Image 1 (cartoon, rainbow, N blue to C red):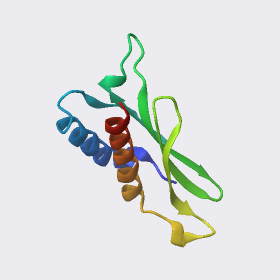
Image 2 (cartoon, one colour; image 1 turned 30 degrees about the vertical axis):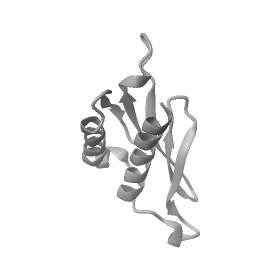
Image 3 (tube, rainbow, N blue to C red; image 1 turned 120 degrees about the horizontal axis):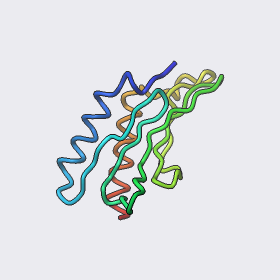
Length: 112
């Protein structure tokens, strides 16, 4: 039901802002598909490996969650985009994408 490709412009804008605000390292988008946006930060580059942060959508019959994941695939943040049983917990997809992008950017700056 949700598709990150429909929000490609928002994701590109958020990564572009991160790139403009980080004079020491380059931020870029490596891929955006239906359920995953892979965000590269040049500080993480090691040789041939190009690990990425990830914004990931996971949907099932109960609803949809969005995750921010670090370069190891560990969760940094999670938000409910749609909850079938408790719609009051829903976060609009654009707001949830912003939250995940800011989590990734802030984590990068705080930890590395």
